[in-house]
Image 1 (cartoon, rainbow, N blue to C red):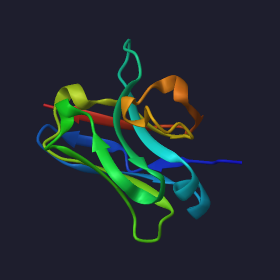
Image 2: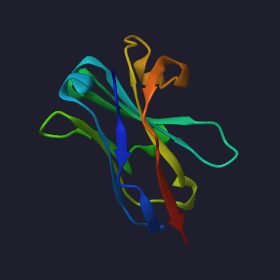
Image 3: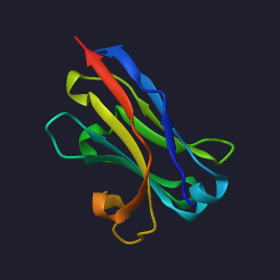
Image 4: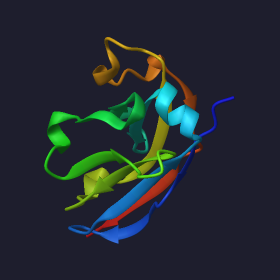
Length: 126
């Protein structure tokens, strides 16, 4: 069974940085596409970044490029989301999820991700 666990959330001032981690098994990180999503109160869950099986082809949605980066750790059992120059609007619950979809994986469609972590809270203050 695929199990994912997020960590690294917390409170930070605007302009600060956080590094989130999505831990799973080595098999999970190499058999599935791993995506990061976020959800602010009252808003729909939205895709942030994704990485292909085995840590290949890191992808960040256009609006977040230059501030966010996604990567697989050296051990191959976690996918990290590095967030810099955080803004108030970046606050929310951040989730990682696993998908087996191939062609549309960069679309970060919530419906295509079938295994989810419990989420980690990111708070950004002014």
